[in-house]
Length: 110
Image (tube, rainbow, N blue to C red; front, side):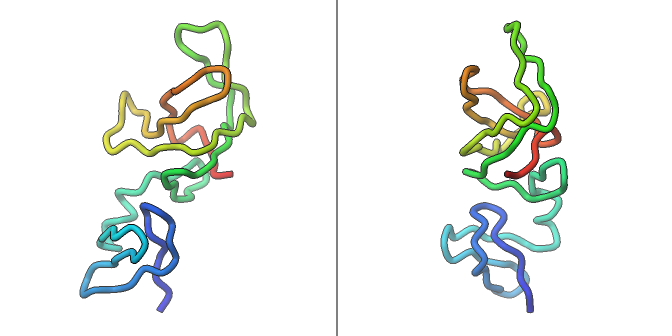
């Protein structure tokens, strides 16, 4: 049986315990039937995890600045937010701009 990777850390060694799956690396427990609904996915539908690198897929204007984040900008070590902030579900440090919130719909997994 092919089990999905852990939605928190991406570990491929998840195992079943009754109706839930358990990750041996981070001890995260989830129900595979509801986990897909709770996952944060990029523009292409890939599940994002804390620490992933992503690439911005369109130019983004930055409030309070005359600059913009250009398409193709690579962002490393993202942090997924437990609760969205004005529709933004990713926190990331972007060179030249500092810590910002991003929407998962404007990034793709690198």
